[in-house]
Length: 319
Length: 319
Image (cartoon, rainbow over all chains, first blue to last red; front, top):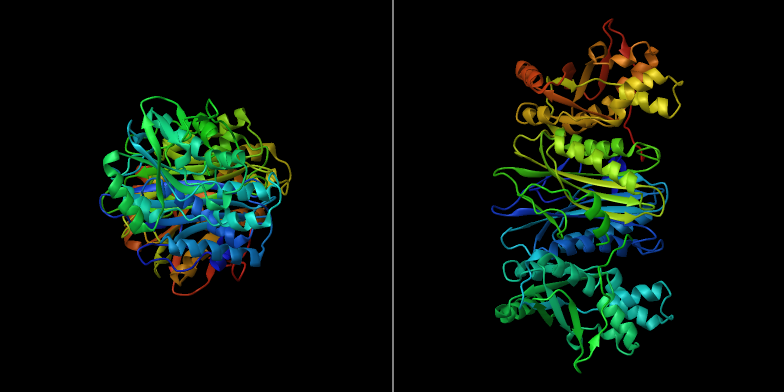
């Protein structure tokens, strides 16, 4: 709507690479390499729902971009650029400066320059809107409908820390400053495995990030690909900080905890060595956790052959 | 963040053209024609600031997309696709259905399919985030820095109706139901001249929409292009509904009134006939209203040689 000139100019107009026409014109212009398509993802983040009102603005700037870069990673796309909308109840210069710092630090690291934006006054609370653009060869993109029966299922990184940090901050777990210190980084400073994800394009089949939790996100792959899965509970990479927590807390965090901007992906058994080599090159931990089946359900089995109870039916919510 | 599955599926998952990978994967994939760059624009719209809480959701769906398509028009870009974020305080099915109807009707008309989105619960009020994508040959894009001394200045459509409707609804003009009926369409159902704008790429020089008001938006062109302008007040295309209003009200609406999703553009004198022919073909009224000068100021002159007072200095606001 065009009310953006002052704050955009002050906080969100750092130079962009010469190949882009950036902030200040009606639109940014983005070039694509030959044979590539543009991958686009968008998110709305609302104060009090997706982040705490007193969150460190640097961490928020980082995470707002990270969760969207994670969607590019889940397609195997290379980040290209992003645009940002910020609605604030009043102009808070230190807050904006710190937010921009966190946002730009990750944008620089991910080679994903901010090329356009909009700032506006909100009626209450902070709302952020982030749209990211990447490029990917459409024949190699990691699509959620691409899993095949017999595929290995892999995850990157470790599971459970972000959920435990969130529950500590929400006080649904007993206060434990040492545990919060050990898990908070996972919640507030996720770093999607972008380079590794790009190297999986054309190698892996289906991929998703674990923003909604392992079982739910894997469920999205299974629903789109019309297949099932068997997971080995004891193969799951539990974050080390969770050791010592009660089994039930660990299980809920590892299987159900969201906000994990790592990848869950499937690939044929023949790609095991290639994937392990790519993970080593990228400095990413990649763990095989089970297989895609011809069934429709998710079965989670312990080493002793017992099964972990999995909530049946779909997940349906509006949060 | 991935909480979108239910409402996105219900309201915002109409089929997209086969060349796009659309709603439901991590990202939408957008192909570009050879030699074209992606033009991107994004906006945040906040209830109580950019629209009235009781606005007709069909009209809001239309306008939310229209104001963003207008940014594509101002670059001379062809619409390609859009993504949408909707934050609602609670799930209101009739509201969402009507909003989606208005949004899709314009998306269909403009050939700008919705290819991705995010719905979430807001803490208070409705927030909309829209990002539109178009394609344009970068050598032909209408950039705001491209005006040249001696250029004609043109506007499409007519001026003033949206501002008068807004002031009637805000009750800063005396109630006048007939006048509101005659002007409301301009405020609530703007239709950016997309086809005409695309035909201007490579023909015109600089362009902007008039979302902030003629003087302010022309000021943006002049600042970016480092030149000035002389306007003929009596040449301005005043919307017919404004006839009979006091001169001062008309003047404020025509020169300062925003929310006009028409184009203000500059082009060399040699292009007059071409532009008039393109406008006729597109069914758009295009009016020459003055010239770009080597100076720095905007001068607005009446037919009798007297000058209209123009606010000096920049425009700086956060709304």
